[in-house]
Image (cartoon, rainbow, N blue to C red; front, side):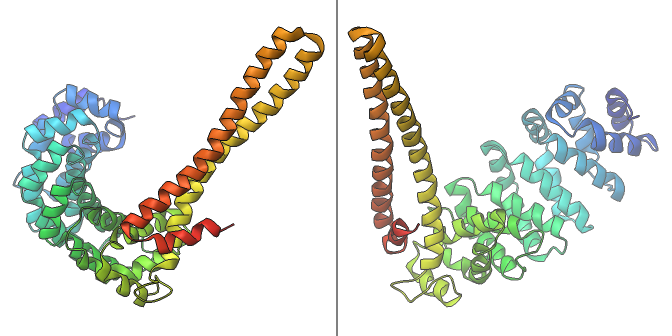
Length: 361
């Protein structure tokens, strides 16, 4: 049976053992694993005494437990605001910059990522100087868990164009790309690093040349059978294609079937075909439903003419016309959607790679 929440908060305030370790363990395992529990923890005033445990002198196990609890509670919006008001961002940045085991840096990066989920929190994290520390951690950490936390923090911080520019100036894109180049496609953190690379290359992005080291790994991931590995890699490659200087490099690592003019055909076919199929499926569902409705209503029309008189027949005819209109809109929408996508592809300079998708079965 877990210790009650009020007792745990009181133990945090007392900061005495063995009650403190028991309280942190109970909070981590039971009381803060969902937004409702985190809200109750905040309502009892637990955020501030929890943050005070992160200040010097640091005690290894206590700090790790406190960081785990902080990462849990910062999944709730109110706790994020309370933690920022109580100086949580600054305390976490100090922990990242201090000597310590990688497990502490891992948990600190996770908590910082959660605190950055809103624009105000991301601004606080950027202004506190966390970016160079996260970039260094991404480049040097040795455990998959720490690499996941560091790359996730960079991904969340890259939510806006201005923050992406700040991250790229600090070397985040080059660090993420270089680290991805060293990972095998089956590495546990490979997907997290790829997602960070995708967000860092979202337009309008700068310094896309910094992504060159990752092109080989991206190409391997783009052909992976697992969807969670394939999709972020394809999206990252699509982000890089507007940079004409990178197309020959993509061709050299096998993402393309030709040179400068025909480069990236294989990858772009995957991207284009996936987008086209989603749009076609949506439009054809509308068309099929409309056709079925039209057939059913045609049968009603026959019945109405035979047995229910002219007025009912006219009403049924009107309903049939509506059904046929739905069919027309469905097929017309599919054709118009494909045409519009071809125009967009032409404008961004990849029509020659996307156009072959229209002929695919």
